[in-house]
Length: 72
Image 1 (tube, rainbow, N blue to C red):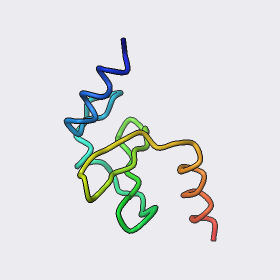
Image 2 (cartoon, rainbow, N blue to C red; image 1 turned 60 degrees about the vertical axis):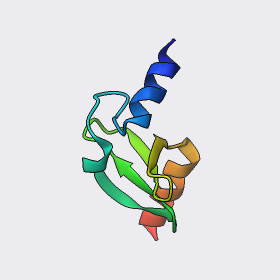
Image 3 (spheres, helix red, strand yellow; image 1 turned 120 degrees about the vertical axis):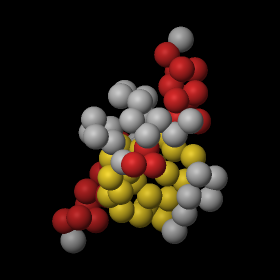
Image 4 (cartoon, rainbow, N blue to C red; image 1 turned 90 degrees about the vertical axis):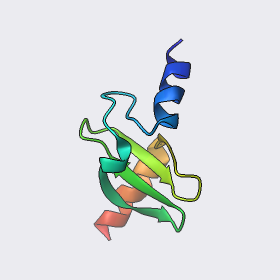
């Protein structure tokens, strides 16, 4: 029941936790040429696909990959 609601919020570019517009979220950095990590004000992390202009929740692996890149 919750997942369809979250999908609608993400399709509209809103955070699933606080409904903050993700285009105003803090950009953390790029994962690939076409995707970047953004962090909402409520601390949830998302992946923005630049080509499709869509957001999705970041996986644990993507978050860890970003953290490792900061330590270098």
